[in-house]
Length: 255
Image (tube, rainbow, N blue to C red; front, side):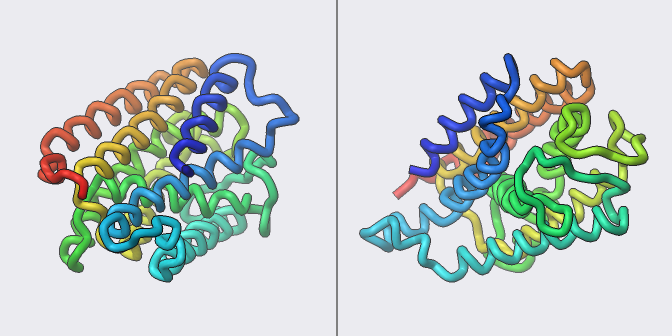
């Protein structure tokens, strides 16, 4: 169900952002989009393991490991954002607008869901994680996919006023320290996730989710004249496709 809700929300939002913009009366939808993205990712991570073990699929949302991992990533994301806003470290000097809804200590509460979404989606297409060695390899891959996404997202967000950098620089007004921090935090927070699904259907959906997200912001970047982020978005889509083609999980059918 959440997957359908996300794609409807995504389609309407994409049409509005690429044309007339999101009307003020629908401003609440910006933060909800991040929540739906996070829930979609969690559904992809936990659904396959429950598909064969539980007759009632709604029971999967009662699993404690789902909420513990999600809470840790939410708190970790919100915590580092709070540090960043108030100390200008590690991301640089910036401040959030009201675009993503209610703030908690100057940080939109929906940003914690954004961290769940980005870390979870990046981990899904990275694979592995059943052992600590596997988790470390997955962490490095997750950091890579997170930084690719951020190289597309942050310049667009800065240009559109989602958040504002007080000392612009680096890549289209966003300090390089921000991207390095995304890699480190994305990799670190992914360590708290359990092993991701090992079947074709989950991997395919995760790939589409990642590709269409960065493609949307890549087109928005082109519209804003941010050519570099558009090129990175196209490269990210192609890299994700290549990763899918050579991933051994592609040959494993869903139960």
